[in-house]
Image (cartoon, rainbow, N blue to C red; front, side, top):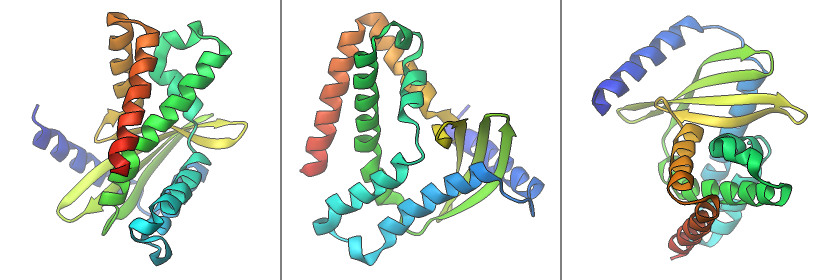
Length: 207
């Protein structure tokens, strides 16, 4: 199935969901996601933080906004799969830190680049005890991109542990890559590659 076909199906589903939840009252998970998204967009659209001279301050404010509601430990644990249980506490903490750095370095520039002139529609919410999904559609010129945020309710409240973009789960995507590297080589090799990738991303970003 081609990308255009998948996108068309996602668009149709999003339209149906939008009609189905029209007038519905958003629950707490939706408000959490909206708070994060609005917080990031407010930073990016604030004239006080525009331009290259304010890049570090802008990135730091974005990071603080996202960090408050993204559970990097849960994301890292799910992305690593069964290997997670074989690691000691120090190894787990190292992996969480590397994983968080990878996400930040990979997506900060993309978020800044594509944040202009967008609108976010919140089209649905499912809650099943301590788990929730918040469905959104990012609206850009001639484009609609479905985003689904998956949240878990823990001691910190509702926290995001996965994001699906056009039906592709970030956690599942990383898990398949990590599993392949571990299977073909080893966990230490995965850590080495993560360190190298994070360094490369930082160097490219600072160029």
